[in-house]
Amino acid sequence: MKPKIFLTRPIPEKALAMMEAECEVDIWHTSEILPPTAERLPGLDGLVTYSHEPVTAEMIASAPNLKVISNVGVGYNHIDAEAARAQGVAVGNTPGVLSETTADTTFAQLLAAARHLVPASIFVQEKRWTCYDPNIFHGFDVHHATLGIIGMGRIGYEVAKRALGFDMRVLYYKRTRREDWEAALGIEYASFDRLLEESDFITLHVPMTEETHHLIGKEEFQKMKPTAILVNIARGPVVDPAALYEALKNGEIARAALDVTDPEPIPMDDPLLTLDNALIFPHLGSSTLQTRTRMATMAAENLLAGLKGEPLPYSVFG
Image 1 (cartoon, rainbow, N blue to C red):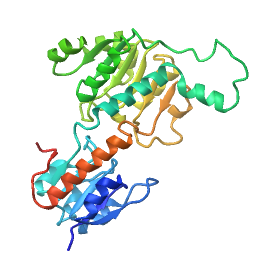
Image 2 (cartoon, rainbow, N blue to C red; image 1 turned 90 degrees about the vertical axis):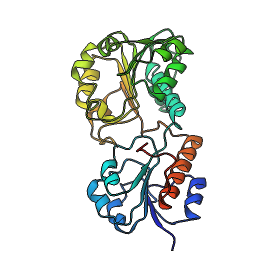
Image 3 (tube, rainbow, N blue to C red; image 1 turned 30 degrees about the vertical axis):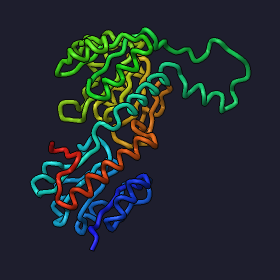
């Protein structure tokens, strides 16, 4: 009999065909509500997570046949990987494939916030543009501004490369300084506080850990320029949403663009949704056809290897 696997979301056809050729596949065919993963786990050999549904230690313990959890994405903090390891379950992710695409999204959202692109488009769609008015939707220049990158990994590196095309001055903060990247790109290391104080734009690219939970909160907003624009494309809880709301409402910073929220999806009664200077997107970081297909293909490779008891090509355990 073919091994039984469950996909928490539909995936691109190329990767799905790889799985269907060797597995009995069950797919949750809607994104309206979270799939009932826990109900399906006891009889599964493999699980493919394509969102951020929690996979807890209790859930893993309920699946005695489970051999592999394959995550379509880089971040896997929603999976109790150590519990999986203790039970002999392999865990894989898709590193390295989405850095450039996510950097593109970072810059797209930065530009949208800087130049009022979303409200300006809505203004026209609502048929309110009746004459040319040079005094509406004034934005901020991106070129020659200072960009502060918090979390200088692969995505941060790609964001810095794009910033150089806009003649931006780039500061970065990282626990481990990268002097080789400084020399290669002409970027500058800065302390956390100095970056907050000097940057016109701040982008976040840190993983979600206990240390980074609410990394940006009330005290950090008070150190930023009143004209600063914050872009969070990391994880929602990296920013304290209540502090962000107050900072935007009170003019402590100018604008924010959020690709991720806390919680996610953002509740429809969240006060951030009442603010004109907050742009909120539905987690689009790596959302291109090419990148998502490659991610799903890597996840399929991990899944099939794990089902055969082979080392995963992209294991989170190294």
